[in-house]
Structures are given as structure tokens and as C-alpha cells.
Length: 384
Image (cartoon, rainbow, N blue to C red; front, side, top):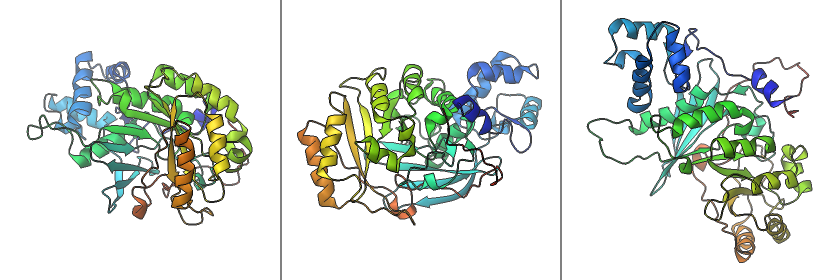
């Protein structure tokens, strides 16, 4: 299945449950066109854009400088609402996980991770996932559909709602708690590239959510054809879910490696636009006991990444029910890290966050169900 066919087959609903068109996620030109259907002038689109992205309003009735009859028309024909909050869980370490229901009832999870000098929001791009990585909880949930650009943005906007970060007279001049975005939630972002790119462009727009591309990281399991496109069009930071130093080992835990083996993936990384010693690629490496954590694996990783500006995040495996894997012991992780550091690589060990609410890396999973009939024989993993 081509990426274009995949996008069509797993597309997000074009309207909400009431048949209204979502305005969140439209770029400025599209917003003008959408409102022009009802003969509304361009300046109205600019006003609506300001209310959505600067003021964070959740209903048209709050748009005070629009005529009452216009607000009624917008309410009838369009939507700017947030997803429905199903559950909110707060970890003992301050991490917050939200389970959000979209307009068709499908659910995704988003996670906010507060730190001393920044706050990072982990955003989902799909309902479920098609990759079936053996160690990832999300991979046990079949892909249901892609998220639309509006549904990706709504996760960011929901977080701002909860954190109270829309500008008001009371908080004028205050810094933001939410400073960084990582596309590391449910799904493979590059299999939903068009919607992800559209959402991130609005995030980065100075007149949009105004989050610098330097503070946005997109993580991929290695969808090689879209890596260059991502660098050229978005210029965001790139993270690669690597997790193994050889094709044989990587293919055994990450089936995508059978399609895009390591030499193709690393070639794409070496040619990523803007790559330099000042702007390195991050390689994510989950530490699995007796699977990929031997000293030999570390030495092979050094050889694999030679002369590539990068850092390597070592991630203690976050257990989930039925995973079949265990986390490497602390001493083994430390030994692995020393080999990488001796070779000149930054190899920090990521401190797990939100483990007690299953919000840590690889633990996200919602209760959404596949829309298609189980008897269908077409394989959604066969993307070319």
C-alpha cells in the first residue's frame, strides 16, 4: 500500500459528529476559503484565527468582536471545540496523562512532562499504530486511523487549557510551562506526514501557536522516504527509534527494518537537512535485558553511527502487562553508556517519567477499536 493509499484508507473524518467543518488545523488560506463559502470576507478569517490561536477560545460565542448573527452562523456550520476529556491521570512525579476522545469517539493519549527549565508535551499522530514494535504497548493496538491536523493541534491546545497558558490580563508577561513538543505519542508520524506537517506549521507560525521549530522534535521508527521531506519542509529536530545496532536484531523487534534496513535509514540521517555538530540527530535506544544491552551491542552501535552528528538516549524499558521483556539492570545500562561515552558520544540515560500511570515511553495505549471488520484480509502494514 502506498503512503497516499494509506492516507486515504485511514483518513480522519472531514467533519465532526454534527457535520460541522473543523476550523482548527486549516492554514490561513484554507480558513479564508472555508469562510468564503458563506460570503465572509478575509478580515473575518483573520479575526477567527486570532481568537483560535492567540486567545484559545473553545466556542464562537466567546469571539466578542464578531456580530452575534455571525457567531450563530459559525456555531452552526463550523467547529473549534476541543476533544472530550475521558480521563486525566497525574503521576507522583508531576507528569500528566490525558485520554482524549475525538469527535467520532476514537481515543488517543497525550502526556505533559514538567521539568525544571522546560515542559514537554508528547503528542500522538494516529489512533493505534501499524508498526507492531515488539516492546511498545501502543504497537499491540491495531491502527484505526490517522489523526487530522486539527486533532493533533487540539492536543496542544488542550494542554494549554489545563496549564492556563492562554494570554490574559492576569498572566501577561509570564513564561510558559509548555515549551517543547515531541511527536512521540501513539502512532508513526511519518505515516501521517501531511496532517502532522500541517499541524506543526501552525504550531511554528508566529501568528499561530508560536512554538519554535528548535523546540519541536519528531520521532520516527524509520520511514525513510519522508525523512528528507520532513527536514526540508519543517526543519524540526529529528529523533530515530533505533533500539538495535544490526539488521538481524532490529528486524526481530522492529518489523519496519525489513522494509527500510539500517543502511538506508542511516543514509537518510546523514543527509538530513541542517544536520551539524550543533544540531544533532537523537537516536533512541530502549534497554532490553539480554536482548540489545550487551557490550558487543554498544560497540556495534559505535561502528554504526561513526561520523554521524548525534546523541544516543538510553531508555530504561518501561514495563507493561504482557510485554515479555524486562528492563536491563542499572549496572548493565551504565556499562553500555560508558562504551558510547568513551567513543565520544553523549549517551544520557533517560529518567523514566509517569511510570505509575503508564505514561512513560512505550506505554501509551487507548481503548479505541478498529473501524474495519476483523475479517478483512488486507494487510495495513504493507506500506511502500
